[in-house]
Image (cartoon, rainbow, N blue to C red; front, side, top):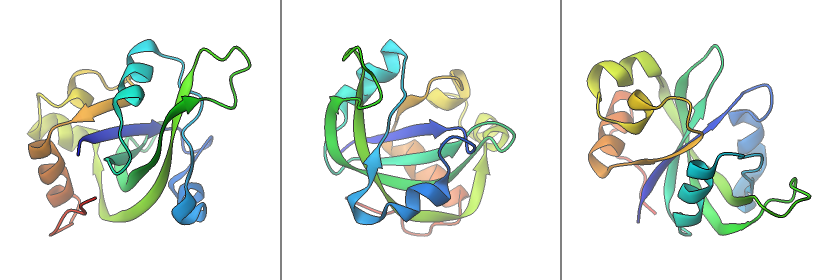
Length: 141
């Protein structure tokens, strides 16, 4: 199993909307960056990802699970772009701000490249961010 981080502008797709999709989840659409697309193509069913709100919030606020591996993005008429389907797993009891991540996890992809919309997370980073967010026992696939 691998760990990831997926980013969304709350005005476009919020954590609240993601949770409303339930266990079936929803497509993670709209990614138009080659590196992010490559990361999505590596995602496997059961992988876990942090759900990160961009914009003013800039914080990890929840955890999702990949429920369907990469497939054509239904919002892309060209057929060039892919998406995965994700379902909400857990809220973080306390959001973890980008500033905290930059201070404590300087080598994390989010600290080095905060603009990349889909990025890998190491197991150690996963545990640390979960702890920072108030999860005593991080969810497992």
